[in-house]
Length: 231
Image 1 (cartoon, one colour):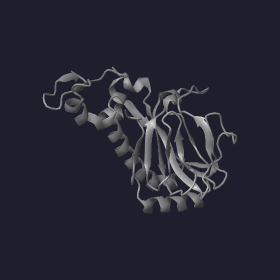
Image 2 (cartoon, rainbow, N blue to C red):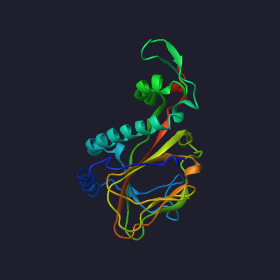
Image 3 (cartoon, rainbow, N blue to C red):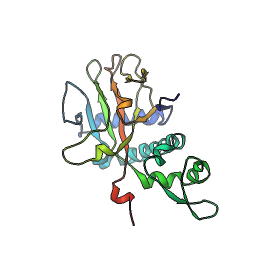
Image 4 (cartoon, rainbow, N blue to C red):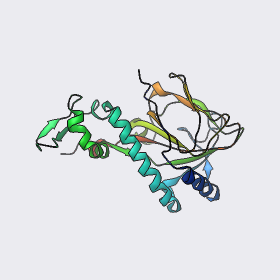
């Protein structure tokens, strides 16, 4: 039985990770890390940069988005009900060109050749957040999931997958723990983790003991209904 947690080694090269950490440290745009309720150091202690807000990160961001898109597509190819179980989709058959309803029975034949277009039609990536957790104190130790109502919008309710990419190796501490799966993932530079956003995959980030921890995080979420349900 799968736990729906996928770990992809070498999603980013170690060279890229090292250069990005240097870029992070030199940036003047670092801010205290926030949770869904704002800054709350009883739950999360980190230093963050939202990369999409700052043009100097654009080149790095392009590389991050490229590998993120590639691995999310691989995840959705494996767990294709994330695409077709919530919304009934009709697509053109890749051979006949005729409209056909996408189902579990014909996904390999009909859905897989259209996978990239289907992902773009249904989903978007949230802004990428770079985070530093200081050795001995930084953490997101509060057990949390990623779907919840917000006062000023409902985008968090649209979240489907979480992902993170570790930027450095941590010899001791700093693991990502998944509560119900009883799974703990040790940070390794370039490794990407993808998992569902709901309460079934409640998780936390432990204090790094041996060194500071650097990580990229974000979500894949449904597009607004107005974009999906077009006439």
